[in-house]
Image (cartoon, rainbow, N blue to C red):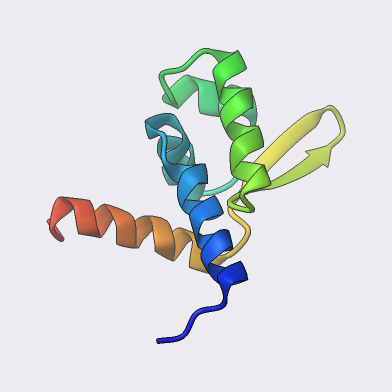
Length: 97
């Protein structure tokens, strides 16, 4: 299998973006639908400042989208393939249970 160096670099960026428990938790929450930072703070056990930091890293890695509506900011997954990636990771670590 031949892979371009730029694709390998992008894969590393994505994997690094998810490589924290809170970031993966945020992605799992967003798998169910969009959420505001306040909503994420209710379910992810981290300080709001840390949540903001993680959201920035996830956005930089292209793993989430940010949408502003009035005063509120909403985060979501950019595509079904991102959700499938999260599902596949969880299936892998749980052994399919």
